[in-house]
Length: 287
Ligand code: FAD
Image (cartoon, rainbow, N blue to C red; front, side, top):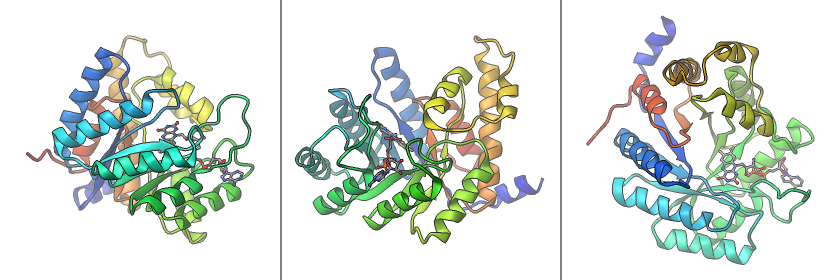
């Protein structure tokens, strides 16, 4: 009751939605349906991921431009630096700035198999981008530690370097234990990290996919979550959606009560769950 009461008093909640470039005609349709459904909620921005394989940057750029053109919502391409030279990155950034893009999600990207070190980390990319133009910059943060970091303190200092290089906000890796996020936010504040720490919310629609993601991202899947999906038929999508929405709503309620004002949704190009959660947060479609 107390949670619902405080929810009804919420004001000024920001949301952002993350998509990935579609790679089939069916996925293309799903993406644009989702963009059209979510855009009237007037998100702070919509971001589009960027993969390492060739051609993906062009697709990221095309999707970002089209979202902006068709919805007027501010858009943010993700950009990784492991697979490009500083000269290439400067050119990409300049092109983005010239086409009106003002926010970039700046990432290192995953190391290619067999590679253990890189010349450029995300903090270096933030410095480079800020040198090209005065972008708003989001970076990644890991409440449960990045898999490669030797310890949490090392990883926190890395986040601090990204803040000092000029990032404005950090979007977290998804998580399920809200206390893990809240402790991380406290530790970041105690370390003097002057960044808005934005929880990355993954509304789960497919438990198998979740387990795969969690495996390579160092995200703990709690036993209670495992139990919730245990025994649900693979084709029982409606029930699984209800379950996913319920779990995410509970998380968002707790976080909102703890003062979180901006939620980032990993939509996986689907709109239903994110839309429902935003509605619960008090957001309504505006024409
Ligand atoms: P960094 O901040 O550079 O950190 C990477 C690792 O290196 C950390 O363990 C850090 O502690 C360590 N480190 C940093 N500096 C040093 C140093 N000087 N010496 C030694 N170690 C160091 N991937 C994609 O390919 N495309 C996407 O679109 C994409 N979007 C994402 C969006 C979000 C919100 C998140 C959370 C992740 C995303 N990723 C994406 C995944 C991301 O690229 C990987 O997690 C990647 O392995 C790390 O990227 P980073 O920007 O966090 O790297």
